[in-house]
Length: 177
Image 1 (cartoon, rainbow, N blue to C red):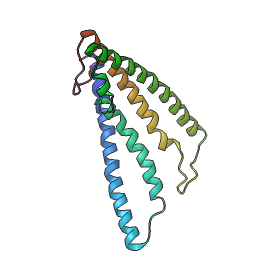
Image 2: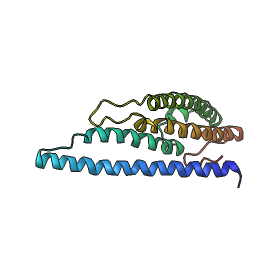
Image 3: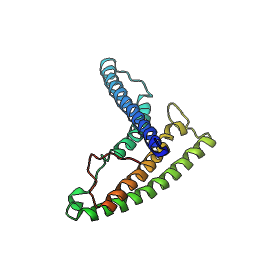
Image 4: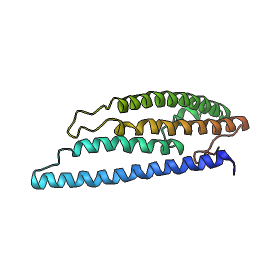
């Protein structure tokens, strides 16, 4: 087994782990909100930091799940328009747009990592009920862009091979390095 195959498996397992954590966050949020509503209606009381914690968990849930959605190509695409053109042109469009996504993910990774590092170095604290440091809340964002950057490079390889072979990439086709 070569290095790229092993790296691909490690990447996939990491993304799967991120997706599981995202799902657990959704499950905990559902229970938390339900209990909070019942307690508020029954006892006219709510725990003040609940809204804040749920807001932070929404950020984590969203960004932990994005890499898995992108890996499995479950994101929104403009297939209605693109399907009207020949398969080779479709692969070329997919290749070009994916190269643009590589650049975008690299840019967003750089910007969000720089912001997170600055917030860590300056000990930035959010002005809220809990007053948490900001960097642990936002560190998931550059992590997500790193994973999407890696995945977009994998997609470039897939679309490039399909373009060279003159074949159309199937919706369920697995990404391999």
